Amino acid sequence: MGKILCATRGGEASYATQDAAIALARERNSSLIFLYVADVRFLDKTAAPIVVDANQEVVKMGEFLLLMAQERAAAQGIEAQAIVRRGRLRTELVAAAKELDADLIVLGRPLGAEAVFDDATLSRFAASLWTEAGVEVRIV
Image 1 (cartoon, rainbow, N blue to C red):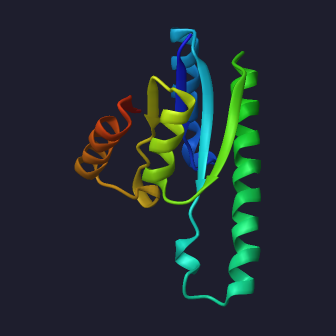
Image 2: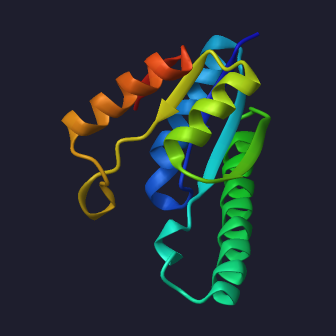
């Protein structure tokens, strides 16, 4: 049985990615792991006590969003694990893929205001992940 690692930000914008990962888990008879990376570097210029509180809140939000993803998977007959990590997306995604011995990483393609990358940048990011982690990366 393989392992699919699905990076997700959670919420409505991630539903299509989660559904694609769930379908792939079913097709491949693979286990499914949703990963949320809490990256609070944007708070680096803020007072330290606030950063600690905000960091905890972002992690809690990630846990909640992943619980919703697990419920979506369960509703479609797939049991999924959920992991929240702190740090940079690339670093944590590669580390998780290696530690969990994943054989596929699933990334979403957010559109419109949700888009962080254009298609070319997202493709380069996926290719670099594939090389770095040694794991197939699929953009859905």
